[in-house]
Length: 299
Image 1 (cartoon, rainbow, N blue to C red):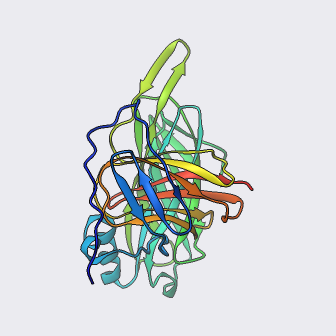
Image 2: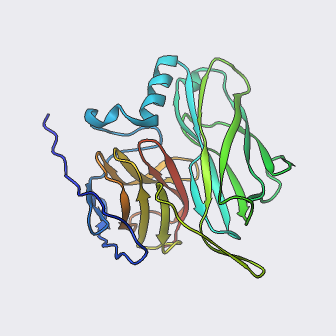
Image 3: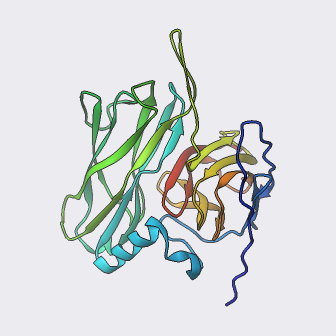
């Protein structure tokens, strides 16, 4: 089958003064553009851990390697934390995801225990949902939960971001166990929290500059009603998808699915008038990374 690729021009550079052209993505697909590069995508039935890709682009990136390992292991699971950007003083909710699994429910796996570590000078857990301890500047959450399906959100971590001794922190899955069995192959992928924007603390002002790495930068308005403008930064070429999932981790609506994407800064208007009101995660998935942003729809 002949595959027609849309050739994209390489972005010459991004400045804060750049005007980003936008167009609408609805139920039939659309165009995402940065004024130089245009990405044309069509809606596909993607979900967490399940994507429809061209064979020409399938065998690259972390996700492909992880899928192969899980498939060959017989009983397998991929546990991930997406990366997020947040300003100091804001509250951020970050999911722990069962991104992919193989024959998981055929085992005795029902509950799990995860230990998540991070820089505690940047993130402060909210509430008492999970046991928390801090030694120096290392924080550790212990999450114990139950699985209900082969894919989905296992738990949500809620933090307050604050000025600390760094501009970002890894969210490291220090350990993950299925409590009832050791038969399941467990793969993990850590996330990052990046502080962004102008931060003030007393008389001290720090400007934290956004790097050229990939990120899901903004969605506005949020909460949204009929549409929302979504901005994102890409740093690698390859298969890229964006979609909404609900709080159980189930796909609500794909926004785009494209085989070949150049690095650059992009923006598009998402048509949300047929999406039910609710609380969601907006997920951006590149060949090697996963990014999330909390997203509310109110009709």
